Image 1: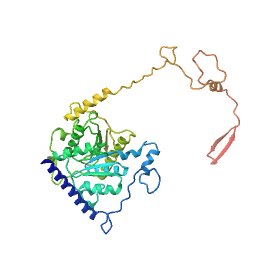
Image 2: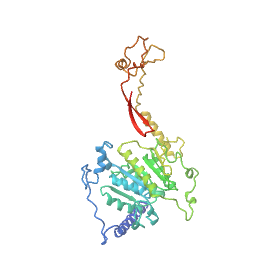
Image 3: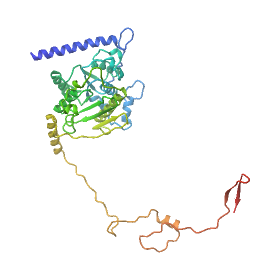
Image 4: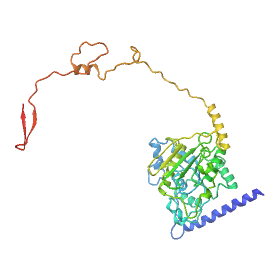
Amino acid sequence: NMSTVEELKLRVRELENELIKCKQRRSAEGDATGKEPQARARIEKMSAEVVDSNPYSRLMALKRMGIVEDYEKIRTFAVAVVGVGGVGSVTAEMLTRCGIGKLLLFDYDKVELANMNRLFFQPHQAGLSKVEAAEHTLRNINPDVKFEIHNYNITTVDNFAHFMARISKGGMEEGKPVDLLLSCVDNFEARMAINTACNELGQVWMESGVSENAVSGHIQLMIPGETACFACAPPLVVAANIDEKTLKRDGVCAASLPTTMGVVAGLLVQNTLKYLLGFGTVSYYLGYNAMQDFFPTMAMKANPQCSDSHCRNQQVEYSKKEAERPKQEVVVEEEQVVHEDNEWGIELVSEVTEEELQAASGPVPDLPEGIHVAYSIPEKKPLKSLPYLDITFEHCALQYREF
């Protein structure tokens, strides 16, 4: 019975998570007795009160300064983060500190000492699943956030079906979709799986990545049917259908800098906040080149010949919505002819008033219409006795003389 098998798998996963939690309690940054650090009490409503005990006062200041109209709305959003590594873990932490309503974390990997060059994870968490270690740390940072973790690989058939179910029904209100999905994975297979799921569900998502040489990265907003999906303009590895596993060599790994990953995570979360809270300009694509401090931007439309059939279907739906949307008439104001005395419509305008002209020029002679005196030479007046500076080098002295 398939339902029984799925229930058993789910139960095994729950027991594994409980076991990891028990191990984590013993190794967590608690006191010598092994007790977990005391978390603060949950805060039911965000407050703008400026006191040391209010973790939201500086966030709520955005409202007072006119940046965000309603910052409290952040608590109504659910965001899925796929990949809790160098970029994803920092992304999850930033969203947690910002007071997001709910975070869904997906990752199948474990914390290793090789990850310590990156941000967020700590050495004592080595061996724990990344999602469990992340949840423990994030819950201590902000207990107001709801967390849902899934420790599996989304690219397998069974897990992909469950992944799609949680994306479409794991929102703030159970049964509703998440508001945004953030891809922080490090391989094209997982990106294509996310792309397929979001195209089929019509789910808006943002993709992020860091180059193998660790000195460049990017973020990209994907709106199914409107903007280019990952399959609309695929990288060479995807377009040529190359197996990524064949590109890896023993003893060779990609470079990794916590600085670059921190910058990309910051750009990703900033774009997320702008998209969810409706302030500023949301970037469709924003790159980062650390070597030249260059930030390229662009926007790509969906490809009508995209290899993903769900993307093409979404494009049809988007075109229908655009056709039904009432068109706004653009009123073009006709330029008024300022001067009709000549065929070019040119008018000569003086830069000074008549009073200023009279005061500067004295009596104005009779001149043809349209011609004005620009300036006049003032009358010569006898010079008064004025001092001047004379340097006499013979006596090495300064002397003042008069005319």
